[in-house]
Length: 597
Image 1 (cartoon, helix red, strand yellow):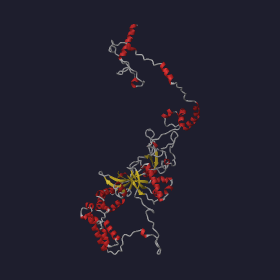
Image 2: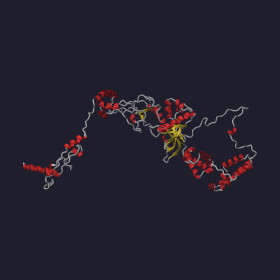
Image 3: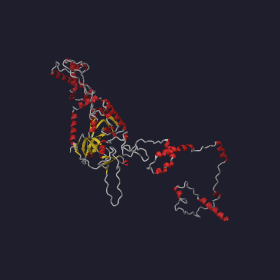
Image 4: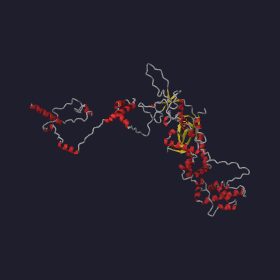
């Protein structure tokens, strides 16, 4: 029951795809929608596989710098398998928020800030344990170090010296190590000190009345008196009294020097109303990340000024009012939600059962990848198999490796794509005898962003021309999956190449000079084209084809006597049809020939 109860602040798995790894999120809010469903407002964490290769290189550089700084060689001494699995435990925090249905929650996990004092192998020993040390910005595509690191070491903690003996002297110069700012054993009584503080507040109120900018910010006497009663005025009064040697007369004279009363202001009084609103907006977005607040909202303020203003702002009524509003909003929101276990079968499960044939039906379809070993641990036996990777590769994972893939976003064993050992029982050779490059992980099965140019050697190109009878390129173009014995082709080309070099393939061509060509063209001019035979006949007394119309027996359309090939452009250039007058002239000449006979 407690394992299925999810509360605000829990780190959980979310499933958005049946084949991709689970998402890791932190629940910030649980809200109930209008239709009764529960939505979770979550903070996003990203894996190494979710960011670009350039940022991964920066993350590895940051890890090496941390190892050198802490003088820790644990990472370099780990075996390759543990290094491979440790990369799956690294996450990257982001400021991105998103809303997801609570029904997509698939369990809890643990995400912690990387602790330099803790061994890296402890994350591998614990299940569902992750760590992060960098912050990733999905919009800007940047990777920055988290400012909330745990500072442990000689740079941040003081070295405690040994205890001095009774008669041993301290050889250090104590005047350089500390400064005395108040003496509680002075001759002044508590009553005299309180009276001096009242006088200092009165001087501060009068100084604000004389200052023009203060009269605008505190238009009333009560506001000026309240501002003069803040700690900055009391600290100045006590410092003045200590500097005067606890002489009341000298201290009072220091409060009102030659130029007028001393005005002391703190950050709460220096900031304008618009700057205060910007600070509250930034605090709502970034929390107590004062570096980001300064960079994005208040770049003209120093980091010291922002931190000092924050602690003063927490003492105001506005902070108390906002705290009450947030508490009221939190009361109206859900504190926890119960999500039952997800027991529906995964679509990537491979079914190994074979149903009996009915009425002589054909053979049942074979399960893709059946008989192949697990792509991660290379086992061939498992209670359940899952399809993994692109469908055309037909890869599969066993039950334990599938669970590891969903939780940690990688395979248990390093593959040869990372220059590791190749796994057995893999189809690593193509039909043409060449090794396949993208046969392991689905990451490389898709088309890459950068195109490549495959350039063959001169010997290979010569072998293709010399051994065309063995290769039969036209036949293989229609049968691309037939194997080609490349070794035999190369051996035959080596034998044929010396014989081919003895026989010159091209005959030398002797070109005649230009003068002889010109004399030949002058001696043999182009013949004059004769006019058509029917052009000399007078057609003035002839009539059009009305007397003897032309019948189109070949086609019932208006295309005339053009053949099928001419209509479809299959016979080259279509023949030009004679005009009606040429046809009439030919028929007239034929009639005259008959009359002469």
